[in-house]
View: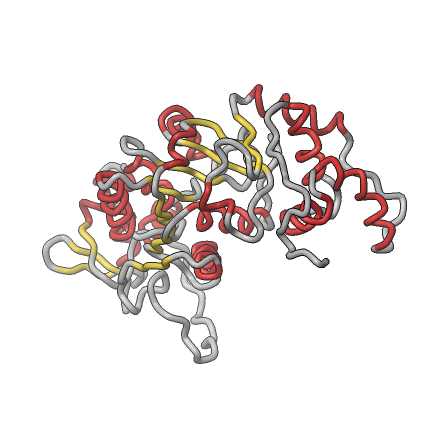
Length: 348
């Protein structure tokens, strides 16, 4: 009789020791075996050890010759590296593995976890958004994160700069989980190193990647499905078109999660719907803004809605005189507008 893709003809016994974990780790680390294939193989063969033994024949039937599963030495080295980083290996179906995440079709077969594992038993909501967030967006992320924490909800995000970092920082006292795209011992971006260290103590960091893995572009969409899979809902604060935050929102919808968005100014690209019109020809290039890096950072935090100069100064943590010089240059370039009451914005 045919079985469903994720059914278990033979009851699957979750691993409890390193010797039990090895076949699971070897199976998911084997070439061409992703989460969906892993679950299918378990469903067909009943255990990771049996699936691992059958894998070379499965590969031959698929036209792949000279196939060898992940060596035991490699799996043992990964376990050693994970433990050296202070992390614990969580196995799908085993103790500690988050129940909500286990329900999604392509649930990670393994997770490396560093920090407070009890956070995985709490109700969770993901809070994601733009890396180049506006000052208003950052303040909103912090306020939402604090409010969620006060309500007993654990805040989940991706440890990226911008909205992610703001959400994590605000939720540190109440509980927050970061899902990483690389290894548990690889912090990206490096500017969040101090935050990541705090989270290893009072929060929790998770990843499905082996220790030592440097994050690459293809890792982030896979990371995003874990963020949404852990959570009852996903809140998008700001997100550019085709951004990772919108990928997370689509994953959440596919997984049957709630998706929510913070209203923003419709003329701000981080809040506006897609424009169906063809892209116009680019305007003539303008000369570079003086105080280069600071000018760019100021513009990142501004949208069409006026924002207080003092708030941007605090967000950037720069001397007021230096900020004023950069702001004047931006105003001369026509890249910002000043408003009454010390407010500034990008031109409409």
